[in-house]
Length: 116
Image (cartoon, rainbow, N blue to C red; front, side, top):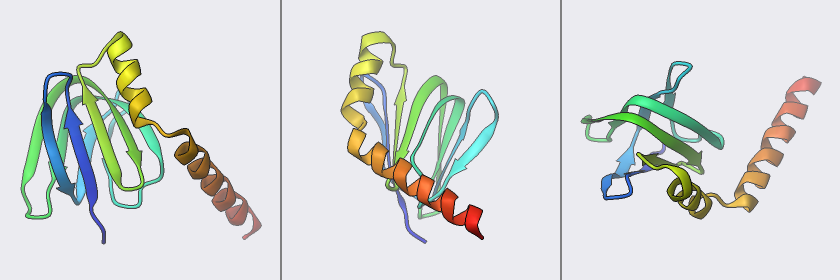
């Protein structure tokens, strides 16, 4: 199984940068895990983030709220960003061509599963 590249940052500093086998977060709906080969995904996360590293350590970060983005085995979590700051950071992280490509792949997979 592959690894995730994880970047967790606030406007002031980088809190974690490295690889992980799993990232566990809690959203307003409930807890979820991000594993390698996860499809494109964005979510608001709150309460905590746990990064499970390849050397079996767990980096736990307690938060109030953050924005999570997953794309091509890269997990970016922006903590304590608001207003213009959030918009600017998200814009710099998002790549519209990747989003479109990811959506096309998801649609193709859905069509194939309907035919089965």
